[in-house]
Image (cartoon, rainbow, N blue to C red):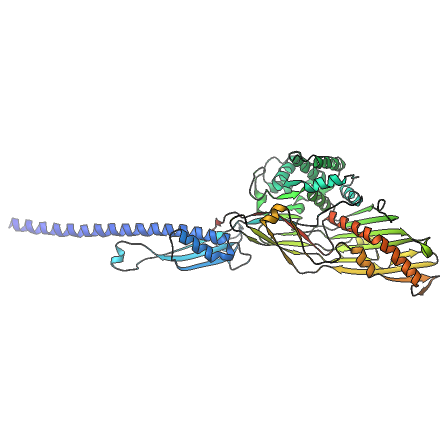
Length: 549
């Protein structure tokens, strides 16, 4: 009896052992399959992350970039691959899930999703495709460009530039042609300039944003440029800056550094940190003339520039510079959508030339008024590719320019809240003969022109111009062709006699060309043109994409 019971117990133990062995084997198999699925999931997620970064770095070819990256990481045939380009805004006030906006331009990010079958060893005995792995990732690119807007002073033909720059600086300037050329040739990187400016302003710690928000004068800007020049080996530029520094050291004109340079995402870089993007180069002359112009926002400058101009008895100039438009600057470093603008500028020139013949006793007077709205440049696209072939496209829009021969009220001239009324000019004012006239030319339009800069353009310092005006270098000549004259003799209005008409026209024609040169140089010094906009890209940084989600 006892043997029978023992036999029964041994059978139960054998059955239980077999059962637990099967459970253990199944558990081990399940653990192996789960482990394999976990490894597959990690591998797929890593590949998705890399694909999202690649797609974000090339949003115009996002799907192709993502697929190539997946293939390179061993995922040849992903199921239901979906790549959605969009816009990512790194705004900490937004919830992380709302920072990426699919399909919203400009594209600077991409969201990638795909699925793949998971690898199993034991589960496939029961189902051929038992498990599917789904992964998703979002990447954003860190591409940015540094660019500026405004005309460039290409040549110095007379003393008008010294007079204007001196008035803007509040001093007498006596730079030579060699001085100007040296300043125009001197490259200054943003990092070197900002570090020198931080030292000049005694900002010893913090970020470049702290520097740009500090109180500064034009003299501080010149001093910082001079510090950089000391390291360049350009002795002539150092001489020129020393001259300017001596003349501007006592100026009380403050400058809004943020209106001079907008660093965008680079503003948070620590002072002294050689971050990529801060190696963008600017010309020393552009920095100084732009700083002088920005510092004179809502100021009026008056000067006499006619002493050295052949054929003129006098040439008086009044300049009024409006405040730069809000949230804009002369130069900017930023992502797609960043904007730079010039300030609205008004010029009033009054030229006088001696008459001849019937008008030999007269001083023939020609008052010219220019009202130039601000020009704008917007970073529209950055294309990043290998082999140093990145490109940046700036959508540039010139400001409308109204150019007149006529009289403008002095109070209206400096009031930028409304346009001045222009009346007929008193060209000849003799007791017996009075000649009046008026002319108007409008230049520029509201359409944008896409200007594309390659890396070769950046390296060469290429300046590109919107081609919208045919009078940029012939303002006075264009006005004279439109001039409508009337004459009064002994107080009686009659049609202008041919002799007097020819006399006035011929006399004014002799001063048109030298006046055109003066106007062009003066506008270039102020960083503006009639109906055109000059744009330069100083640097393009195609940083690798980053994972955002």
